[in-house]
Structure formats: C-alpha cells, structure tokens
Amino acid sequence: MQDNQTKFKETEVGLIPEGWGVLKFGDVSNFRYGKMPEKNKITSTGYPIYSGYRVVGNYSECMCTQPKLIIVARGVGGTGDVKISPPNCWVTNLSIIADLDEKIINKQFLKYYFHRGLKRFDSGSAQSQITIGDLNNIELTLPPIEEQRKIAEVLGALDDKIELNRKMNKTLESIGQAIFKHTFRHSEQTEESLKPLSEFGQIVCGKTPSKAKSEYFGGEIPFIKIPDMHGQTFILKTEDSLTEEGKNSQPNKTIPTGSICVSCIATVGLVSITEKNSQTNQQINSIAPFKKELTYYLYFSLKEIEQDIKDMASGGSATLNLNTGHFSNIKIVMPEDEDLHRFDKKIKPLFDQILNNMKQIETLSKIRDSLLPRLMNGKLRLG
Image (cartoon, helix red, strand yellow):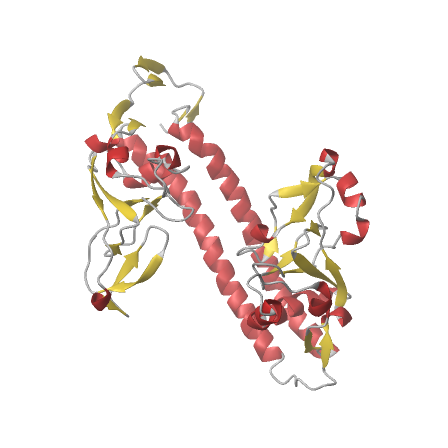
C-alpha cells in the first residue's frame, strides 16, 4: 500500500487520482425494480426472497441467478442501503437491482464505495424512496477495474474475518447453552429451590445523570442503553459514556464487571454482560451477582425465560414496562454450589473466547473503517 504519494489531476468534478475516471452510474449499469412475489408461488423450500434488508421467505421462481448489487429503494430506516443479494434469489419491490458492466465496475467495490448509503440521493417524496432516475445520474469516481478488485479483496478479507468471528461466537454460545441445560437438567423447580433474583445479586435500576451537566458525559465509563445491547453477549461499546464526575453524581447506579443487564421497557428481554464497570439508563435493570460464578448461570437462566419476562412486562399495556420491584421478584432455581462450580469451570473458557472474538471484531472493524475512506478517495493506493 502506498499512502500520501498519490498524484491528482483536475477534472470538472474536482481533483481525482491519476488513472481514475468519472462515470455516471447509469453508464455502467442497467437498473430494474424488484417485484412483489405472487402469494400462491411462495413456498417453504424454493429460492430465497430478498427484500434488500434480509431473506423473508422462499419462492418458486428465480429473478437473479447470480449475486447482484441491490439498492434498497424504499422502506423504514434502510432507504439507500447498498447490499449484495444471495445467489439464485427473488428480489422484492423494496429494492432496485443493478446489472453492472463488470468489465468496468466491481460490485463488491461498489458496495464499499456506497458504504454510507445513498440517502443523500433520496427523491424527497412523502415516503422516503430512491428511483432509477436518481441512480442513473449519480457520478462515480472510479479507479481501474484491477484496483477496484484489490480494494474489494482487502476490505472483504477483513469483513470475512469479522463474520467468521460472529459465527464462531454463535456456535460457542450454543455449546454453552447445551452445557447449561445438561448441568442443570435435574434441578427441580420446587417452592424451596425457586428464589427471587434479589437473592442472586444486587438489583440496580439505571438512571440518566442530569443532561444539563455537559461535564458528566464523554468520558471512559460506559453508559449502557438498549440499542447498545442488541446482539451483544458482552457490552464492549456504547453510544454514550460518562466521566468520573458523571459516575460520581449517582454512585449507587454503578454496576461492576460481570453484571447482567436486562432491558425492561419497550424492547424487553435483551440480556447482556458488562465488560467493565458501567452505568445504565432507566430502561435497564441489572443484577450485580453476589458471587462471580453466578454470572453465566444468570445469563442463560434469563435468556431462557425471555418470553416470560415479556409477558410480565405487558400488563395489558401497549408499551412494555417491567418495573424494578417485579424484576427483583422473578424467581429462578438457585443451583447447588457443586453444580454451579462445575458449570462455571466448563463455561468460562467458552465465554473468554467469545469476549476475545468480540474484541477482535472491534479491532478489525476499526482497521476497516480507517482504511475504507482513504482507499475510496485514492489517498491510499494498492500497488
């Protein structure tokens, strides 16, 4: 890789790297809208139906026999996202299919080129959408096709490793769940064995420090909110953080490493583990276990009763809300010390690996995100 040695040339769109060219998107692609599948042709085993967000079912007919660049044309929250479709699939009318001239442009490269999406090309109608007309007129600043392929390979290799770590973590957690079920399969749910969560650890309902105090925010202490918990076994990264001053403004709200966070308002039933001392907002109740060996036992126990937690939170209201008192009184089996020790000894190495994989994902993501803009503007060249 060569950095800061790129020569640039003046064009009508400004300075671009030497050897690069400017083309309109419509000059290198034919666009077509996806189509809603006919209900009577939806099957349980056919070709995947792809909306641009995810696979939503199966269909008896195939629209794309090869992976295609897909632009989400309309919908809630994802308009302008650029994806690669599965091979041999049907694409719904939420998306536009780009049939690229692959002698000139590489679809994997273009996916990274539009990594921030195409929301700025939104047509501005009442329902957010992007049209084929919008796409035809987008100007692309492109390196030669071989350089495109090299850029896509470098970034793709990082994404492949990130995805491999995610899949590995799902497998490790599944193994952990099997060990949990096997270890405690004989544990009886009797009146004597069922104990409230308050007997397993200190229950802490989160709270947001005063937002009028700017000096409370922007430090090194994680401030956990529900969006930080989605899909996260351990919480490594949070959108917001607190300073020492912010933490000390409500010291009784600090939860230690290895605490179990459970979302209890609106989105109910998410379960995650703190990776360092943290605080949460009021939508989360946490358990700071009285002994470390309880951490993974509580994690799996609460994940097992996710639906029960949601049912408790409904209370006949449209907005789910499980208050701290009711949360504290949720009863689960108190394990025998011998079983708990045996379980923790087996499970800890798995969760250590999950945590290491998650940290590696964070590192790889930062590397990718730092390389991507420099590769896309030509300041970093692949020789």
